[in-house]
Image (cartoon, rainbow, N blue to C red; front, side, top):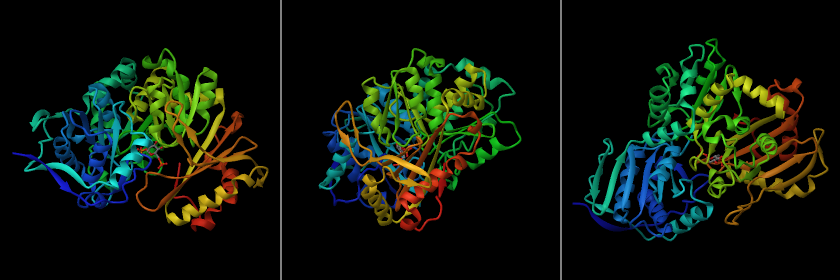
Length: 546
Ligand code: G16
């Protein structure tokens, strides 16, 4: 018979959540009391969870099941009324958000390190989402961090054999109802309520329309099978890497041109595949491809906004739109034409939550392969894929032509992000500091024939709760309209990752087909002249270019 017990603990000083929750190496999470401390701190910051309902699930990576059993014991010992857990402790991030909202839960814990590698030597992560289904605000994550630094004990169960998570069902443990639920159904029903499944089914049944979806051996496999194959009639061959594995097959489940190379090669090959898409570790990111053609996430967001009226769920129009600051300004042009507001927020999906809750925006997105809408409070990989499929069906045009038409209408916003990974943190901080020290002197200076118009360090004031987030990245604007943004990633687990974002608008169709890396080359050179990346990091070239 399980009994609630209080265990004395010693604190860890490194439990500050980053852009999206606490992400560390598995071995860090496996340290004695490490996971328990973070979970108890979260419960404490919520004012306790006595009588509350929580959801629990993750992306299925190594340590997911073990962590889930630990959290179940702690939730019971802390007096939760109801705990709804995805079968096998699986819930994609968008599905968790949908489930929290559907059952009116007080929040949920999501076990994921997103696109970071998995396996015993890989990464693990945990984050808390609130009753709106969205990631906890910065105030809450800061409070959790403060609580981890003063915690003296946590509550758990002794003599608890765990819950059988492999079967759907209900178990009472002390005063808590622990319900194991189908991780896919609520999410798949929600998707069916948003899009024209009949039109998508017809598109997919056309033998001339070949598509592939790559789940990268991560959580979206079962979701894609249910939605694309079972509900929309796609052939089994549509699905690539759809068997979820705890180590993601040893790969990096990050849907970009580097890590989803198999899919990219297929779309560039001679099979005439019309549409390709991939999602990441926890199912919230997406990459979309046409035949021999990559659709940049910034462009994807702009296209979805410009065409939203063609989708049943958005046919009455958009309240407003938003993008993270480093995302290209392509969507701003669409918003202007639609006559709706376009909000610019810091990197991190959590900043969209208040805008959605207050009805200010309907669609939003980020350059980091994230797009979503107010149907949930997370970005949503399969939602974006279905949106594109619905669009292709409604416009009876391939993805490539839809994008080309968009550029003809709005011009092309060339965009690229250069990542320098695993840099020594001191070197990265020195580069950022030197840049900030020079910000005021930059306007008027010329670098590689590009003159700086203005430069600043981005701050954001939330229009709903008035909170201010400073130091969200350096922005350098040039007189020709181009922009460079520089910031350090908040999701890595070793060293620092320097992210540099370049964008420039072009109206002349003669340039639309130019390779982005070539078009933006002068801007890259100006960036190097301003930041002296080589000097500070010793690196000659970025590790990942998107
Ligand atoms: C998270 C956040 C996103 C952010 C991305 C990259 O995504 O939810 O809002 O854009 O990290 O952040 P950074 O540039 O700080 O590494 P995910 O998919 O990793 O949860």
